Length: 173
Image 1 (cartoon, rainbow, N blue to C red):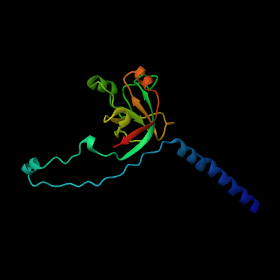
Image 2: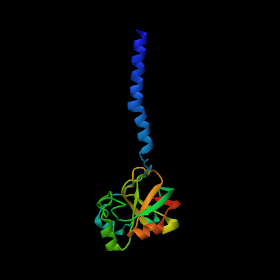
Image 3: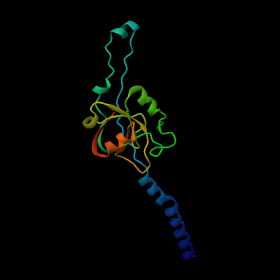
Image 4: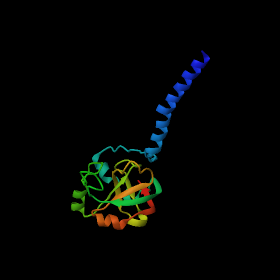
């Protein structure tokens, strides 16, 4: 009787390890980590009249005046809107924003792909691009996790010329 109980317990534990614990470990290793953002306290002042609102100074920070929430070093590559580098809608990244229309209208690209930052996050690369602000609008292949980004460029030749930048300082806002 003890031998049967022991065998049943052993088989049960083996099934738990194979069906729950091992997949959990593998899933945790393959899924990208998310960046931890710090929260900031926000206070509001109620104005008594519209006239008072006109006389109050603008207390909103200018984007260039803000301090980054976090500064990290990343490995950066570049990509362009080619079907063989993206998918069957090469101008439309994960956020749904039209990169090609933006480039035609403004003559510049300001989009990056990153798996570890929320879509819409604003970042800068001060050593390489100065005060230019980039926005996370796309995702990369799932195998790329924390610390890897892809900068969108309008042409394949520009992306190829960019190459790989290691230890690129990225300020996260």
